[in-house]
Length: 210
Picture 1 (cartoon, rainbow, N blue to C red):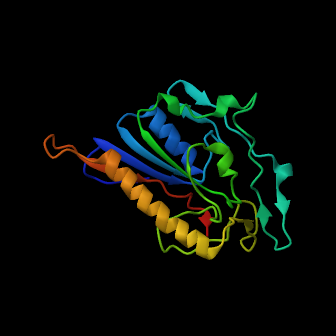
Picture 2: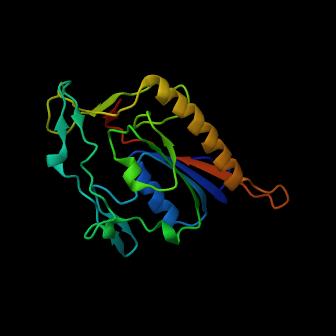
């Protein structure tokens, strides 16, 4: 993550994809986080155990049998993560009810990386946008991939992200406007008290290549 250096008094987090569960965890367990933006992620801990002090939140693991290989050679992984709000999975839910942060949840209905609509309620939705809703004018990313350990350098695992270029571009413009309004509202410092504000941007794992 990268935080603005002006002090920790009022902190905002902007997250997307897998890092969204970490953002929810930070807002739930750490103090001083006033606003959290969660874009196309999961409301439960995914893939690896989460440790905080003496607490361990077990992960939801993907169901690999639900991966579909498309004629293009890309994987469709949208339905690999189970519903966390079902019996046996609730232990992986992030306890955001203990957080004092304000939340903005945004999902793309054509997200092919996650079934993001399943993991959030009362959200901003974009029907024809894909997974990577980034800042305005970042190019639409119809697919993504990574080079995994143990594979030959020329071999990549790639998956589709969904969305159409025009609808995705329009969604990025609209969401960025909402994100700025959200942070202005909930991170606005008082000139009388000298409160400072910070924005924390959480980035992707460096092995991922888009």
